[in-house]
Image 1: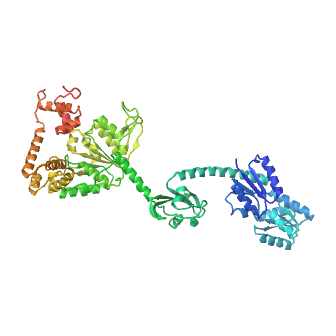
Image 2 (image 1 turned 120 degrees about the vertical axis):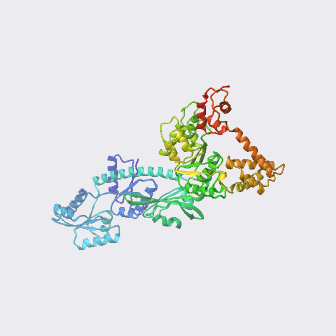
Image 3 (image 1 turned 135 degrees about the vertical axis):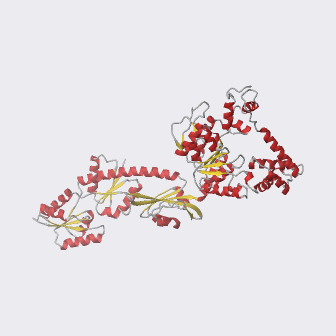
Length: 640
């Protein structure tokens, strides 16, 4: 229910208003007070404290109260009927055929209206504009008296002064029509204000929930809204805040007049605390109305980043290596690192190519660390480690009930988990054709659909793929999609094998030895003669093989001194075992074929998993599939 207050010094007018309110059904909404001009502001403030939504008054009191209170004012109008009634009564009061009537008016009447009433009532009507200034009212009354006015028509205040001056006067009163108009307007204003209050309260509640300081200042420098966080950050203890210049710290004051350029995360020190400050300009019909200032302690950003990094680390979605962790001094590796650094600054797909053990994932993590999305997740998956159906589920996720064993509420895929970060697809050549097709769509559309889902989910993940296979050769054999290759190969990076990194074998061996000696102890001494032996080795397993070999030397060195001859013997033995593991390329399809038996036994050892089988046999998966077909091996019914 709206609450309407009415203040006027004329008790008759107040009683008339009460009667009109009763006819309008507003008796419960109207509170009234008869008060003098001197007490009007005090009464209005009491009304405000009582929760009055709008105040009705008239004449001088409007000008007196409008700058003293915040509550909306509705002025009781002087209708044409009210004026005509007062002027006709004034003429009859003088008993003259054409009297001179002085009208004391707060709003000067239009000359044409004066002429209409003068002609209509056969009177000489002159208006004398007045204000709330008593001296001006007296001056105008003196003028009317000197001009020979027979009678004065005035409001309550002007009429009272006319009585003091001994001038004949009649009251310009507001009738039922004027009061009805004022009450209905006040009711509308009150309802609108209540709606605005509710909206403002909801907005304030939302703003107060924010941990960031929020401050709204209008173009006149008035503070329109401020939340609890802003009060605390700016050390504002007073409850009532009106003018920005009177309340805000110097570092914020100047922002209240910056209406041209918005500010985004400027670092400002306020009350000894570094804060990130941003502004937003509010415009209505291209006209600026307010400026919104947000404050965020810089420490909060650090804490949030720490939480994010901790969360990602707990889930294993972080990169652990940067470019400084890539060791080497050769021209080939330094050139590769420089190219990788330039790639890191972009968000285009990268294809890492190189033999096994060259450090493709190390480069992938370093590129992520050097990229704009370094603060985001780093998600890695080996495409050869999972069968196609499980790989699809891991990459794209699934909805609830998508298949037997699917998790309730579904599960996000690795692409979703890598959003705003990097996803590393190792051994991408091992994906089947369906998986390659889905990957191509992700590259083209930047969105995925979960298994069993019916909507696309946008993802913003930088894709780094890696392969140790000859992809162009695979394309010719039909094992890899040509269009996918071209999309992945936007930024190609070929990582040189260790045998092409002149001088790096000795450098890497010494650094690896220092690392492993800290872990295992021992006294491994890599003499120049041992380094010569290491550098003459081919290292088909590249850095991974070298790392494993140096680790073995460190463990051995705990019990004995490692000599050049022992190193050479170990390398010779390692090479022989590798050669012995290579499959003989024998023809034939019978059960006695050694190659067929070797493939079957390895498949059985790996429960039929072709990717793991190919890896263990030292051949590519597509090569294994061709051999399975050629040797007539039933993958579903392996012989016992």
